[in-house]
Image (cartoon, rainbow, N blue to C red; front, side, top):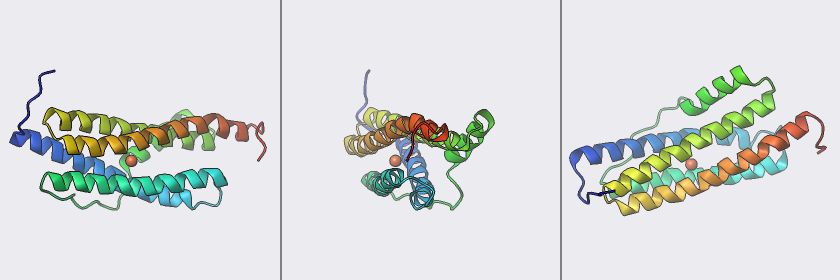
Length: 169
Ligand SMILES: [Fe+2]
């Protein structure tokens, strides 16, 4: 792939727009994580993992702020409305799966995979325009979101095991 090393105004607008989208996505998913991580209904190990991902997510938003800073700008203000990917994922899984617990973990996994995909796009965009630092910061976020997606995937059989009474707490 032939890469250009200088950023045009269009490149800059696209990159800044995508970084802002990712920043809003991370900031809004904090609301969901705060609620889930403190929910007494959750198993203790689940709460611990959600808590650690909450700290990672704070870092993700901070890295995106740094990436925007490197481009000479700051994140645009994030509204208080719910994370749209999570809202859609919850709606879709609700139409497909009837078990509420399994449905919830599938929706969480789908939303996390959206985040991973958003970073794949951001990393590619940053690399095309030669913004190595932006790409590096996004790669750190992508790695942790991928780990979280893997953990959520592993939660599906465990959740199902609890639902079917095959795993006793
Ligand atoms: Fe993230």
